[in-house]
Length: 141
Image 1 (spheres, rainbow, N blue to C red):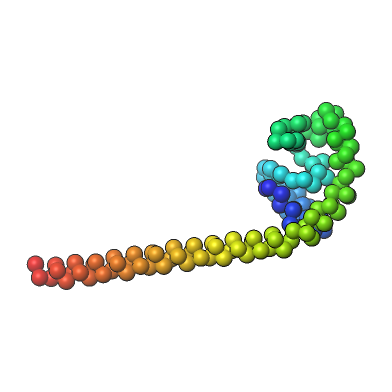
Image 2 (cartoon, one colour):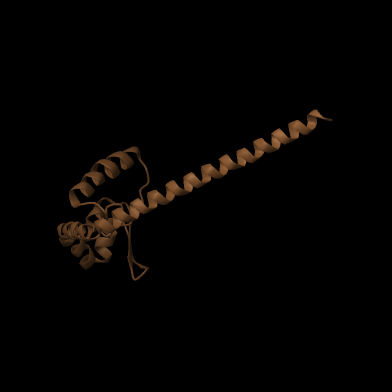
């Protein structure tokens, strides 16, 4: 999942995390790969890969990351609540754009589906006409 909580407020994100990811997916022993800026979710990970400047900076279990980069881990621990608030602020600023993009995508998919179905129908119509033509000409042979 790539930033699945970015368009959600902190309450909804927390509920999806607990009920959806922890309860539903991990409860059914599914593998979950999560890319997120909300570092407080990292405490439940089996493996963390922290990217900095597009390169792996630290990786390992939460304990290994805490040992390898204690300042980073402490910042994550201290920033958990702050990051939730920042996420909510970020959502408030970008929610309209996200909703517009989502509706644009829905319209595009609908348009493509309509175009595809009309193309199939016209092909069937051409095929039906060809069959009628062949049947008429086969009668005279």
